[in-house]
Structure formats: structure tokens, C-alpha cells
Length: 361
Image (tube, rainbow, N blue to C red; front, side, top):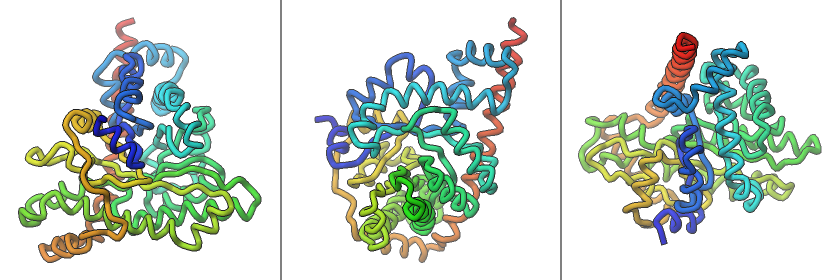
């Protein structure tokens, strides 16, 4: 049995953190589904930027849409939705077989809206309607303003992938926003089965403390934060508040591990995949990491529900001068800024390619 199949058998969903038109037209994504137990995927502006910049797969579509008078964000979202519709259709059998728990793809609202809740809510509803796929998440960042948007979007019945979470506190805030939206639906007599995932970013923690913690703590903080958050996740699902919503028909918001590619070249390329094995979670991984784990990975222990040694590792890092609460806030702010920069790069790329194609006739 392949390592990816073992991980899937444990109860963890393996999603690909990538999408390109080439992956779709070549049959590679279908191969990953069949051979590596991939059951969903995520996307972001950086992924689309690289896909459009480094290939000619989008040239005909860009040329056609430009001739139709489309440009900028409108042109991009049409390109992205075309790709994500194809991917969503590939995952549809999984989505149906798991009653909507799995088989998802994700599309991000404009990162420039990270601190604009009302517009985020409108854009989330518009993009989901435009995509016309029930198994498409709209990604909304878990910033303070984003939390309000998450609650309203869930209440409106739109599935949400909460992104840019960096701590158990961030996760709990996102989970409570989701639960408030579900509770409002229950009170209004609406179907409470609106799916969601909460995406916790892992590897950026370890990159942020390079040179700031002793050698024995290198590449351990991210996993410790994940373990602490997994305990919070399990505690929430066992709470009377959640059980009440579940009895009314609500489905759990699953915890998702994001940013799981190893940043340290001296560390194992499957470090975070092996360490984050946990039932009822999702691990979305870069293509290179997926292939590495499929090729030479192995399933080790299962993440403990009680947090394991998370608190001792975090405490040791604190003694070295790492304030995890402050660092979580910094990482979220920097992540939001990086997403905006990637978004601007993407729009510049589309504009440049449109101009080049126009000049070429």
C-alpha cells in the first residue's frame, strides 16, 4: 500500500495545493486522484500567477476574453473558475460518496478585501454563484474583519475555507464564527449543513524562528502549534455547544493543515506530512511534497488528541525569546500583505500577457 493510501486510510484527506490548466489537460490530476488518494485541492493567487506566467495554456483563453472586453480581476476570475470547474467535476464522485465531507476545490476572494467584511460577503456569494459548483469553497482570511465575513457567508449558505490562521486562538475564533453562522441558520429554520474547513499554516512558524531558537528546537514549533490547535479542535467537537448543532444536522468544520512544504533544505522533505497525521483533518500539500511522500514517505505515529508535548516545546521556544501570540499576529499580518502582493503580481502578469498577445495579433 502506498504511503498516501495509508494516510488516507487513517482518516486524513490529502489535497493538492496546486492547480494549472496543464495538470488538468494532461490527466495528471486524475492520476493523482487514482494513484495517490488525492481528494481535493486548494488554489491561491501565487499558484495562478506562476501557471499563467510560465506556460501558454491560458493564451487562447486570455486572447478571447480580451477581445470580449474583459480585463483585470474579471478576466482572472473567469480563467480560475474554468480551471476549478474542471477540477470540481473530477472530485464530484468523491464529494458525493462522502456526503460533501470531501472532494472540494477552493477559490480565494481578492486578498485586497482582507479587512473589508461587507464586500467580502458580497464577493463570496457572487463567485460561488458564478462557479456553479456545489463542491467549491470560497477562501476568506481569518482576520478580525474576515471573521465577520465568515459568519455572514456561512449564514448565507456559502461554503468557506478559512485561510491565514496561525494559532489555536486564530482557529477558535474562526470556528466560533462558523458556528455562529450555523446557529443562526438553525434559528432561522434553514439547513445547517454548510461545509467549511479552517486552514492552519504550519511551516512559516519554523521559517520565522530560524536562528532564534536552539538547534534542538529547529523545525519543531510549527508542529507544536498544530498539536495545540488539534487539541482545541477535538475539544470543540466534544463540547455541548457543538453537539447541539450536530444534533440539528450541522457538519463539523474540519481542521486543515496548510503550508506543509518543508522550508529547511536540511530537513526531511516530508517532515510536516509525517508529523501532522491525524484523523478527521485535511493536509493540503504542494505537488513536490505529495510526490515525495508517495515515493518515500512513511506513516509514523498519530497526532495525540491531548496536545502531546506541544506546550513544553512552545514553552522552550518562549525561553529562547519567541512570543507565540505576537508571532502569530505578525505572521497573519505578513501573510495578508504577501497575498496582496501576489494578487497585484497576478493582475500585472495578466495585463502583460494580454498586451503581448494583442501585439502578436
